[in-house]
Length: 202
Image (tube, rainbow, N blue to C red; front, side, top):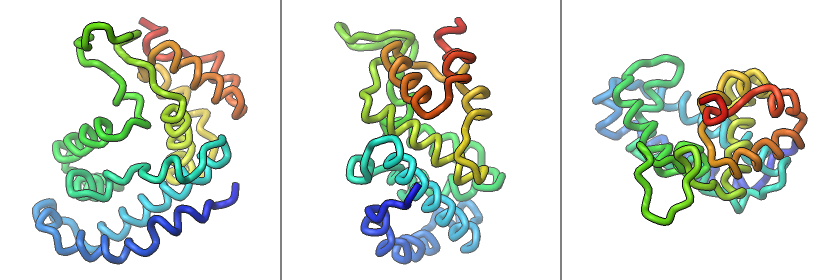
């Protein structure tokens, strides 16, 4: 898969500015982060986003559609806790808050579409505790899974991750069909037909 040039237009001019901001931010001292930890996490995050762009292009969505992918991770609500957590650095409470902020502000995560304890507005079509996830976001979600696999394991193949994680992922039935169809088209028939989503187990 070829790297998409759109990424370079969006990010390359801003990374030095972001590094300068991060290394002088009060949260750096609060979480006892080093400049090296900040640089390592920023590089890792950029690599992940590059791979997501490549995966998105491969499955049929362009860079302009996902130009805001994971941008919240560069903000203070997420960046520093993620940097501390990166490579097992600790600060679990801070990371939990950052993770909640992330999934509730990024609709490419399946968790974004859940209603806690079934509390949803009257008239909302909810199945399995979730509303339908538009195909644009479910495609980005799969691209995110692929990009994470490549960034963190060095391999595009996410078969093992899918088998381990599908049982905890809760989706509206139509979203589940969309994602299964996409995974099948990518060569994951074994996991599509050999594993179940959370709502199919209960």
